[in-house]
Structure formats: structure tokens, C-alpha cells
Length: 230
Image (tube, rainbow, N blue to C red):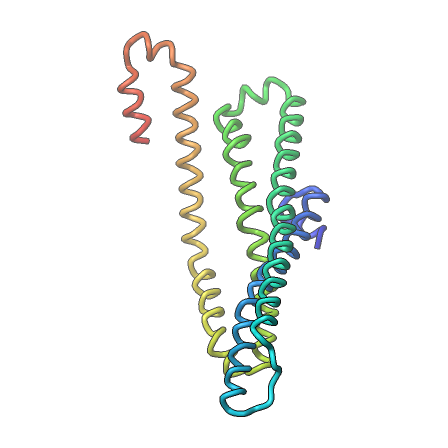
């Protein structure tokens, strides 16, 4: 899996390993969210059993309070561990990527910068790396962990009651189908957003380079209006 992440997301070995750990930790976080309904079902089954004179486990209010406290402690510890795996390591990987990119730029000849748009390079260093952080801290691990935890919960429901599983999970294939059918539209929207960002950076770079002429001819308002229009 580590080699797969390295190839698919152009990550270092350490970054791919941290992504694997983040997926595992966030899967545990998703599964711990079952604790609350489990305790609720336990209480409900015990109460129904008492009403119907069916012998069941005999938990007192003290037992339930103890279970809730233990549940909250476990959820807190797992969530704290997940935070380090999910965010801190991703930001460290992003920082390493920025440093690596800067080191590569230092080794490039001056002719390279003469042929390239400096605004485009600046946006790659800033916006694209910020987008990288957002994707790998708020999207990629969540997608994988959600798929894994949903599969586990689905199997549990199927073994418990397949009719209940069918009633609860029928929306999943429809959601996947909608995502698949809208994939082309999503790519178009994202590409448009990227193009707009690059256009803004180009205009900003041009205005900064011409700031002396703009001030000399009192064109600040016109420059600002043109910038806001773009």
C-alpha cells in the first residue's frame, strides 16, 4: 500500500507511510462513533426485556455511566492520536515538499526562469501546496477510512439482519453512481477554479511589477477595479 500511495500521489516513503497510518487511525475514529448507539441499544433491549419479562443482562445506572465514561475516554484518546496522524504529519510532509521544491529551483539555470511565468511558479509554491495540505488532511484519508469503516459496518449489519442492512445501505450505490456520472462536471469546475486562480496571480504579479508607473499616473483606482473584475 505504501508503494501504491507513493506512485499515485507522488509522495515520499515517509509521507505514504504516514498517510497509511492516518487512514487506519481515522477508520478507528469512525468506528468509535458506534459506541453511543450501541449503549443506547443495550439500554433499549434491557428495558424491552424487562417489560416483556425476558431475562436479560441487568445493568444498573452506575454500569451505564461507567460505560459512557470509558467510551468518552477511548474516543478522546483515539481522536487525539488521529489528529497527530491526520494533520501534524501531513503538514510536515507539505513542509518537506516545499523545501524540496525550493532546492530544485535553486539548481535550475537562469534561462529556465526566463522562459517560465514567475506568477505561475509563485502560485505553485503557495496555492498548490496549500491545496496539497487541504487534500491530504481533509479529503484523501477521509475517503479511504470512510470506505473501510462503511464496509465493516455494512458487514456487521448484514450478519445481524440483511433486511435492515438493505434498508440502511441502499443509498450508497446510488451515491457512488451520482459521483461517477458527475465526474466530468467536477473536473471542469475544478479546472475553471485553477485557471481563475492563475489569472488572478498573473494580474497581481503584473501590477506589482508596474507599481511605480501606476502610482506615477494615479491609476490605483483603475488598477483595483480591473483587478476586482478579474
